[in-house]
Image 1 (cartoon, rainbow, N blue to C red):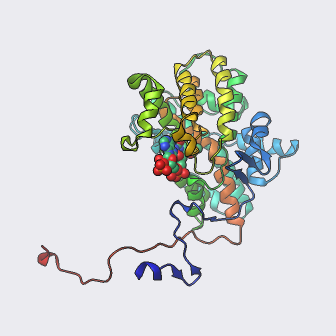
Image 2: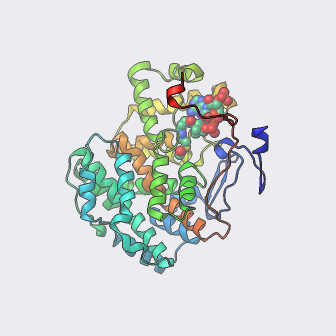
Length: 402
Ligand code: ACO
């Protein structure tokens, strides 16, 4: 009785839809996915073309504004972003206050949450300029914050941003400049840029839906995105790239061969999943995974890094794709199956993979937050429930309870 009556509300019939598998929570013009056909487009442009020919900053502009920038628009945008890549001195102190053993995602999340505290002037007006400035600051400062978090974990100095190097180049310099010898070649810079493009948006995934839900309470952009970063940290979402590497290392160190690990995964009682496999929407092949797989080999070569884990990953993919268990459930490699191998070859520790995903996804969170704010149909996110608890009963005093 209770359950059924609660399915009827003043706005009609309430649907019970765990995980929102069949619920569209918004309308959006930003990203199109056809999971069966393996299609991903930002503002209509196929991901394959953007990955090959565009850049992270250009895609950031495209996602937020809806159109590719003209050369003049691009220059103005890039100049403005580069002007803001430095962070307030307080961020160094904030990051240093954490134990060096803290998970980087905890530090990144706290630092992004601190942004409105350091830059309150952004919100002094509630007009379009405030929104634009908040977007620029978030885009510009997130990579610097992530680089400083890595510096802290590594016990290194946090260098000043020098935007004249270029956006991606300076991020790599800040993050890895002290722990590796020599400059990164153009192939490596291009690979980092491309990985960010691939992660830039993915419509209503867990973290983006979180950003929208939190933002729907009129929460500012920084705090809405901080909530998205927390969602991203879960191993079923952004944490998967890290989990893939741990899995590959475990296979190398314990089982030795991919075949016996696949057998273990198929035994549900083991609780193990093949990390980097499966996707809520892609039931064919994740088009981003195909792009990354192709790039992995050449980037590893450019870095002069031969990685036995790449051979292991490719072997694992081959076994899984010809196995009835994975075929039946339409489980294919997702974008995270190969990205970790590239990050690792660049010199990023495993614990930094999810913060890198966060840098990549920031333009999508910004664009989705802005679209939500301007959609007259937006309402505060407030789902209903099907109540299954006890019926009314009388309170018993503590002293009388047995
Ligand atoms: N390994 C083994 N079995 C799996 C896997 C996997 N990676 N993924 C799904 N399955 C199985 C499930 O056990 C289930 O089997 P059953 O029907 O016999 O019970 C079936 O496939 C369907 O799985 P669900 O969990 O219901 O699928 P859902 O769409 O809810 O989950 C998810 C998608 C969370 C991505 C899942 O595939 C997973 O956990 N993958 C591993 C983690 C991962 O790589 N996440 C990254 C996602 S992409 C991203 O964030 C960029």
